[in-house]
Image: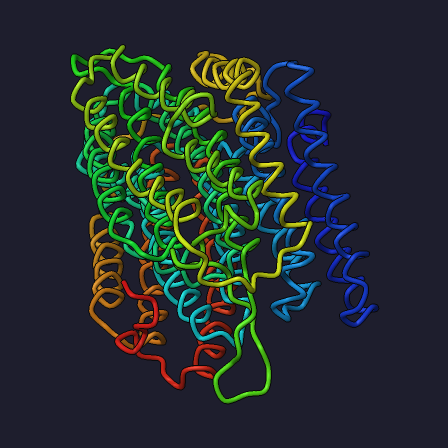
Length: 520
Length: 106
């Protein structure tokens, strides 16, 4: 293995090693010593985070590894930082949450780390085999994490729904990949991009790209392929939901950006208008449905659909109405997805923070219940003013107010839309953002103005610390966003630089442009 | 070439229909396998086509077949986890029918 190979795969290897170590140690410890397992996991995740930050700081170009199967560039590193930070925060709060829910520690931490490893691989994957396998690694891990509270019927139901829709999406992805391989004769994104930019058009190409987009739309939860998402987010244990909402979305978005900018760059006619439609539909549906929810957890699920829509706005505006191409939109989308990590993770952590115990019907035990309903938030500000303030900041950021990171992100999104002449999308985005303020601020009103209904929440400092960290990050990146904006811009510059990938060890076979001829 | 692609498209469509129309989760999982196998047949057929188109460039053709092997392994893993999830659903709910999955209002 060359240095580039190690650079590209080492962050994922850290996580995988830690996962194996955790599962193995759990075997010896037989379910005791949760802190030891948590520390092993945290060491692995911190190692990955350190390597990714080192790559961002060193800034030594694109590393192409394994004959072009995997790359390490700014896209992989920036969103990888988001994913590993989310992993660390979820690990930190699950030391409390896992114990309360009577989940096995070893399998929870191990699956979480493997899922995160799949995400890092997906962010760096540059060919279809790597991409498909890493999508499956992360998806299968998430199915398990969704159903990890095995005795909870809601969690089981969510896991089944996620499994069926997720596998359905994977099949679409695979079929799209197969057709693109058929048309271009290659599975490497850069070679496919070169083959497509000659302007071939065949029905198979259109169908293939369409299937690929449908598969990704399922994974990121874009309308009209979002039906599974609210149910799954609602039924999964909240720490899993938080992880799904931020890390899975970041990884799938990163992979989509890479496909569009490397394989689809010359053919924005194939994907720009479908994405435009999805972006508009997703923003409208996500926000309108979120406004009708009384369960805050479900409201946050729909709001995550809405935020997917904002990200898609930026991607679809890479192609201007008159056909020119600009990569600004992609960097706005990358920054937004990165920024979204902190505010959403914090908001979901707040639901766990206010959790309480409820008796199980027919048994002499209690089970853990997170604050999900609006009533659970009533009057929180009187008893826990700091926590309520933190949640207010997170919600304001989700709604897109300054001085938070949500505002900076949305500003760049809509700026890229206006710059490229997509006024309709920009206006729709601003209007739906105003709608979103209604349901975000409703939670704030309930927290500050209503009389308390429950007072039996059992807070724990680990979860409070996660909320606090997310809030501080939301404010800090909102006030000093430059470093992250630069990284996002560099990511798209690297992707659109024609020769980013050509520095790879040259493949022995050039991508042939093969016409569809009948077999002898 | 065309017959293989038609077969693959037919398998994929039958699978898609099965996932959408059937209500039994086990049958839905089988339909998902059909979809993946449809894609596999397309991959193998394309690999053969590219091999015939440029006889000396072996690796482009072989990659399709490698892809199929990888997909088979992944599909096996997915079904293993899927069946485990279905079993744990059966233990708490005594059903494998999606019409009964109404706890999450969606």
